[in-house]
Length: 218
Image (cartoon, rainbow, N blue to C red):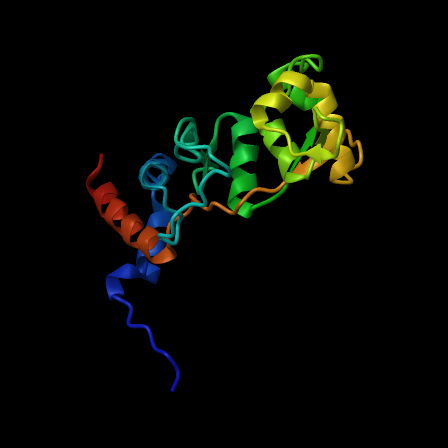
């Protein structure tokens, strides 16, 4: 038996309504699409606030011990644009933000280079003590140091590593122990986080309501 879906008749724009909408003057069509865009923008902001995607599933959280909401800044700058009085384009006014949002929406990899990292975080001080994260990674990779007695080796504590190993040395040892090549660019995987776009049925229902309001507008 094939599955069936019962559709509310008022969830569908009939032919007369479509023709009537096309016959509206450009100013009213722009108002309809702008209003629909503001409604979708509010839905997107609500999803970010609730940390849900367009399917109602929880957004993939940040990696590691990082806390806080993901995509929390994406609600800002989201703007509805109307093209030629017949097309709604809901996007970000900042092109970089729009590209980042697209990567998250599609789950694309983000290419990062050493130059970009230095521009964002500055050139690291390679002579400074290694970070706690580097020290932890060294222990995970099985890094050992000679015992004071000179007999055998032992796994050093985080405190000892941070006191005796520099940032640059730690990076080099980590690459050697994990067989990582010295690269100048790498890909950062991004989880798919779809926050833009409501279900077609919901959009159609909202469009019908806005269309009815437009009929009474001067």
